[in-house]
Figure 1 (cartoon, helix red, strand yellow):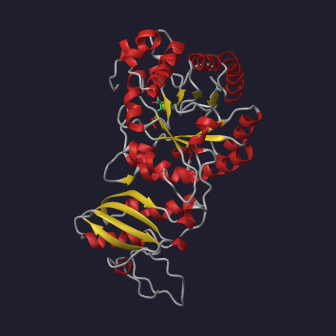
Figure 2 (tube, helix red, strand yellow):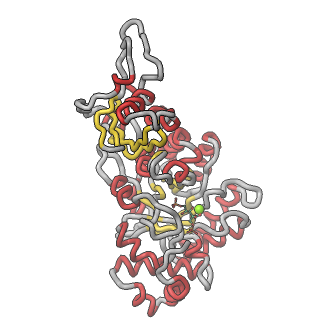
Length: 415
Ligand code: CAP
Ligand code: MG
């Protein structure tokens, strides 16, 4: 490719091959740059180009990406399959969301969406269980599964934390979940928490006759996560929880491989996603982060509350549809709705997102005036009523825990 220049990366007559990865970006060119010049630089820097005109002796494989469509500030770029290493998400992201994020040729650039080709996609494992966890683990039928995270986030002793789990399970919830900043601190060590919580889990199963499980946060360096996953499986839990953005997808891939051997499902929390996706015109969209997470193979993923909860959300419903969509036979992902939820929001949440989800509430369970067990019962009652098509106000007539929750929080979105 002797004499390669930026113009070689722009061809508005080009039709991408089925094997190519097509990425859609929003770009705002720098003041001294026109759209075509900026768009060609995006394709160049994210494939095989650089700022200087290159003189390469001898033949090499042409791995140039092509900007083939410009529509206002939206551009589409096709990347040849050979550019990527199969099954290596870190390498893929270093191309399509790497140096270009800091290029001076653009004031802002946002990776909005990817169309994943079959060969690259199927080089990743995808989830083991996906939304089948609802019935493979819990026998939940048509209803969403439910989870709660003890609050305060950190500072509870192991015993306090485990007892809150017990109360929540007895109240009718399926899952206890660790908070994102609880891993293995002195006030609540990982191994003690695992053992004590699973002991209460067994009691709660015996007392309720329902299956219960625990999303224990193994987030750490990759080697430590693998050791923790081994112990979680040895002790008879079904899940591990990983914070996929902070730990990084290479580490998630290592955990996914080990979880295949161990038969464990993976719950993906997404703390720090908003550093990538909150600014509308820059970064990486949650849609793409969700795509990446599905390819890497987690079974559950937080995707927000369709704007019903306390946190800003990007297109929860559209992202969930992508997570369920057919992707060359790859297993789907169960979306987790969380962040400021409480029983009064459940009917509208199910209206917006459907029932093939997990519903997770912390403050909306433990903040119940009568405590965690009543709060858990109220959340479960709200779910059962909604799935049955009964208005929760009516259901609350003979479900006092739900009535108390509605009296306290109504159907308002918290801030
Ligand atoms: C929810 C939560 C989750 C957020 C994360 C929290 O607690 O535990 O981390 O849901 O956001 O600490 O806020 P509450 P997202 O139920 O008490 O709000 O699901 O959007 O990734
Ligand atoms: Mg949290």
